[in-house]
Every structure is written in C-alpha cells, then in structure tokens.
Length: 230
Image (cartoon, rainbow, N blue to C red; front, side):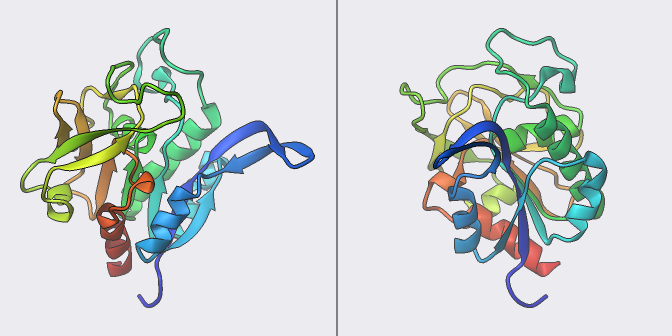
C-alpha cells in the first residue's frame, strides 16, 4: 500500500462532559493516542462505541486497530463475581471493543491492545483477570507510575524492544489465566504479565502500560509497519 496506513483507535464514552458553556455526552480520546499514531507514521480514525454488529464493517476499512485504555472490564465478561475494588462497568465499550477485537482477529488486521485493551484481548480469547493488585499505579490519583518491564526473548515484543525498559503505568488489574493461543512476552519484577501476543496471528500484541505517555515509538511503529505491509 502507499501512503500512511489508517489506524483505528477506540474511544471513551462519557456522559455529562463540560465543553465550554455546554455539558454534553462525549466520545473522548486523550491526545497521546493520536499523537503516538501520527509520530509512528499512521493516520488516525476514532472509533467511539457503536452497535457491535457494525464492528466487522468498521475494521474492514482499517489497516490497523488500537484498543485504548480505560475503565475496568465487567467481570461478567470472563465469568467472575465482581470484586468490591472493581470499578463500575462500561457496558457499551465492553461490547463494542470486544466485537472490534473479534473482527480484527477474524480478518487478520494488525491489532494493538493498550492496558484495558490488552485485558480485553485476553478475555476475547477466553482468559481471565486478576481484579486487584497493588504497586502498578502512582501514589497520587491522575498521575502515571513508572516501573521496568523485561521482554521474553524470541517474542514479537522482544523483536521490537529487546532490552528492559521503564514504562508509564496505571492499572490495578492484570492478566490471570492467559487466553487461548496467547503467550506472555514481557513481565514486571513482581511477575505480572506486562505484554501478551498471539504468535499464530499476523500481528497481535497487547501491552499493559501506556506507550502514548512515553517517547518510545517502537511498539506503535511495529503496528504501523505491520499495517503498511498489508
């Protein structure tokens, strides 16, 4: 293909958002995501929640897909009772983003899951989550923490980022049982799975941290390169 590949990025869906003198519902995406895609060589298309029946048609128009971070996934999606420390459900996002992931997997569209997006990828393939763990957020609300992650040699992630790196992180849930076909491709010092990938697929990767909050473009560049190669 010629030109920049079109990368779809899922969005938040917020009610009662203040816009100047207006208070309106809004589809939101922190600017770090489109800036990261642009800097890595892609064009951005925002994908706010929609009818899951339209997910395959949306993905068919894309060269690559990013499932963005956000609120906790409803534990009902992976057959678990709700922990008191799990946040309120984002029903529309869960349904839409799971449908986008399933469409990308079915079509071979390169896919990157970021934080919540990695967790949804795991759930889409039959995996489960730990509903609370400590030490992966900053002590101050609204601030990203930082910690090192170590790649697993021989993985797709290690091919893109072969060395230990310090990454921006803000999550209190994590992968528990891996979904079918997924392998862990990075870990933190406490053993938490920090990246997963699907070796049998064309290009599918999930990272538990937030590359849109860092200067390292290598993960997004790998997605954009895979989207361009299509």
